[in-house]
Image (cartoon, rainbow, N blue to C red):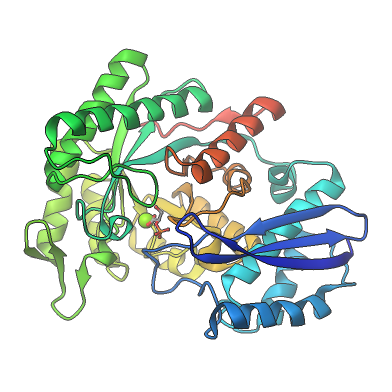
Length: 414
Ligand code: 2PG
Ligand code: MG
């Protein structure tokens, strides 16, 4: 597959920040496009979004990269991504930035899939994908996604445990989202209908009251639909962590929790609210804290690492050695190309971790992430509940499930 053209234009994430829309056209005429999303609560070890000179430098890089790329012939995604990685030369895309690298990697995947006449998930998995995940979405949020004007915990999430199909599971999540809004109007005097970066409601309730409210909404929807709804959290604990004080700061309560108190607090939340999912319960370097929580709660809940693993094989290996988590967040732009993403999936999967493919808080309108989730054999697809940039990915997942058939639903067995 020979590259005929590399094109680009400035685009915008759902937060209104600039990103780059990248297009690749192959000699055959098949083309693909992608614009990378960007996070707010980013892991320290993530590939940088832009090179040190920012967007301007990224655009210069593209000019130069286009000269190197046009005319090159690739027979696989791996060959293409290795070319990108070698062109960058730093090992983590800090010279060209993940907006450029992932934009190219995804655009090539789409173009190649089109040339082959197969869906992207098929191209990425060499036709071996056999299951689809269930949706996982943020219904009430705070932390960095709400400018500190809501709860301290970044996300209260819900997901269906026994939905017969993706569509029915997703519709149940929409019902929970709506019910949470109704309950907030009853219970939260400061509620103005406000939402955060991912379309989750914001609230002036305390963290505990907010979790209880989501549990109530989930229970009501479960008894109306017969679909059991699990409730979980993304604590995004690195965002609460004060390195100098070695403590977590909860601004709502004006309280500092040291490492042991943070672990106790999380274990208590899991037990008190029957949580089935906890992401980033402690900060990104605390493998020990992760392991402690996994050993205490791992039989009833998925303990998921995001900032600690940053979709990076060597961090995953460390986590597996220490038994730090039984689930992992996979975000392609944390490592900057699809080959590295799928290597991380493989490593984590072989070690027994459940795969959660995830959006970023600043998303774009491209649906490609649904294909990454299916080709990864993900158990969950973390992609918000409402907002066009999230819904477009859920719709793509339904299209994959309903049009291509043959894929079975993946259940967590909780
Ligand atoms: C997370 C993500 C998505 P961000 O922490 O899991 O919810 O947030 O994209 O801001 O890192
Ligand atoms: Mg997270």
